[in-house]
Image (cartoon, rainbow, N blue to C red):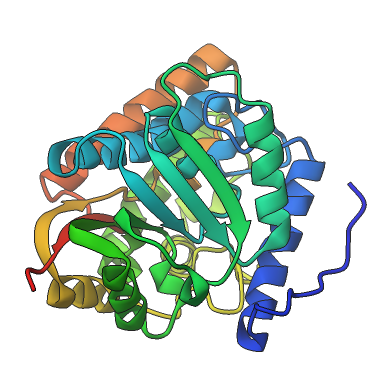
Length: 328
């Protein structure tokens, strides 16, 4: 795909333009390498070396599972045919699944390439039975008007320095009993003990030939190198990038999970908090080998992670939250 220069629309503030440009570059490169931003139509994509998006089966274990949690919470606390505002929708695959579930979605982002690609993906949607409605638009959150039953922040609030302000803005757009639904990272909870478990898993996979990169054999006999390996994995997960890799965007991790959760709990009536995923999103795509083998390994790791988080064997690296607007 030929890279286009980014010119921020007039209604995109200067301090958001760099953020939009980063996400534009990211989605253009991915789509140009064969990525299809649709959990139901995902394809094998070797562009990804460690992300779950590399393999459709792994997309189901992570992204589809996340969306299913969202939809379950909406059924429990909201109902059917909800009017949903998806803030910071990116390439639009969550909004698309909400519409496929019969909801009426207005999905917004400041990255124009993301919205263009989301519209292209929507135009090719073959799953039309029970479809609600879906509109994508390039617009900053502060310019949105209308009334909604739900405002969704899916991995968006940690990109802003004042999440409480965006939550207040969301509340002002909600119906009397409206909901805020969110999934956000909480990297500050993730410990070296958690990284040590991931290090063990990756090392064993590497030794057996099922990991994308070879392990330094001396790690098996050099305690200091093993400690550094664990520390590097911890840093990778806490910063959401590999060592020496540039960040996702200029404002990534501008707020911690604790800050986001505190703002949500302060301004909303908390209905449910659920611990999220711990490590599979940066591990599944690194598996290598015959499909039947790596799918079996992936299924086991997804189940192991779920059980470990539920029982406190590992800390989560993200959380789900749903809250209701407080009575006037």
